[in-house]
Length: 110
Image (cartoon, rainbow, N blue to C red; front, top):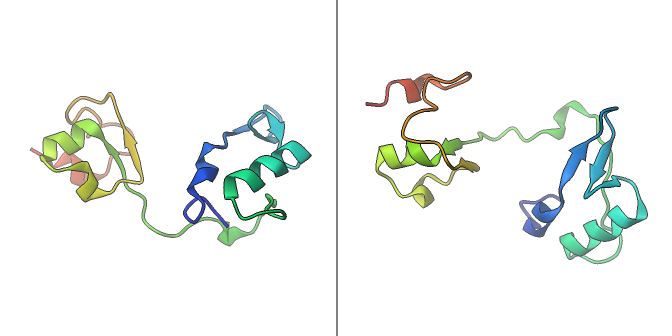
């Protein structure tokens, strides 16, 4: 179960403590309050819960598109056509094209 199948889970806000602990909406990830919030967000009924997973295959292996509103505007395309996973606002034009970690394809944009 994840937010792709249950998008209401995106309303939960995870954070890390200074010691590396995980909080969800300010509560420990394994607290009863967090379990209730997950059940409500998943909308699948009792039993939905978070589990700790340290396995190497726990991450998605699908491509991720992070785009800025400025880059999409410079491309002259409707953002819905590109379907970015993450869309950053307040970035003018191609300001991010030469930033740290920028993909070479963005550097070649006119």
